[in-house]
Image (cartoon, rainbow, N blue to C red; front, side, top):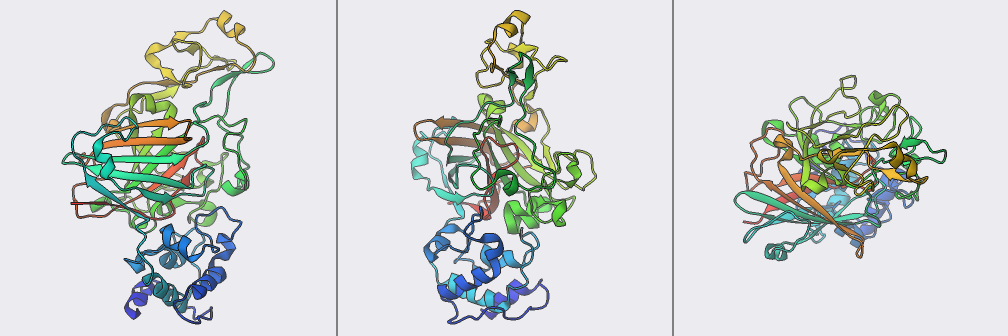
Length: 458
């Protein structure tokens, strides 16, 4: 235990000394008191965070916030002393606290709640959004916690397969409505047209919790966007992100209003002051797989992007460190007239999936526009097949209105050779990753606070 504590504190500041009576050491009662004393200001019962100080022993064991098989990697141990922790370094978290938590964690059964095991596929596997192939029956589900955004889902269920050439993932998550009314042109009460905003803009300087409140309805009137999914992977080798390896998605999140620590501050009037995603050094790259329902699902593709280093003041402030692989993403905004009305439609005047192939563009006539009733909508997005290495990932989503569940299936070559991609070339490696679900949300995603691991069963 002394060696463990020494390793945990090797890069920390001076020991602040015991702050919590520990009697007896290693019991859950002592763990509860530590969590209440050190963490309740941000992780209380009324918070929207995935970890709560009110969790009982069974909830913590199944949560993935502890790792009995590798105690020092437990989030409950290293987060309080990590600068990538959203609450910053918790100075009241003492050596005695660390010892007590480590002692309790070591006695708990391994939950496996953060490890996804890829099993070898037997026969061909597609990417049609349905886990109908026999191989999927041999794959085990991982239930990964998510939180922090406005998604209906609090967990994403995953399983994985691989063969000599490809890796396959299948994901499921609950969602009460499939959201696809992405910023349409809408006829207003006075007969004019307007391209609808994705959401009312939040007040500059506010954060997600303030904007969303405690009971946000992500399908409320006035919200016009699409469902999305993202998976971020560390890339290893020369491009490894140490912060992502330790803290997952939180290692990419930087908020200028919090001195660069994780945060969700809005600043639409000055994007340099808004929270952004980027890595911490010019050499670091995190691979980003990004699915956009309206823009890409019809082509069976997932956008191959990446997160790079970015400095406040650099060009591209709106995107921060988020960039795309070489090629085209296959979508663009349809043109509008000077008065804001739509100029074109697809083969049908009905909005359909609120996007249409650019090749199917038909010019709207004045008579067609005038004949549409108040509240009518016209799709505002042109689509086309993805190209280049940006099209490396096959993926398709299928929504079950009966189960109110998204299903999403992914297929990608294990080795792409692209420097911006994770290469699954070492079956002995554990690949760290994180997940985000965007439920009719532009940026207000729910994410996995735990560092997830993909390993290969050989």
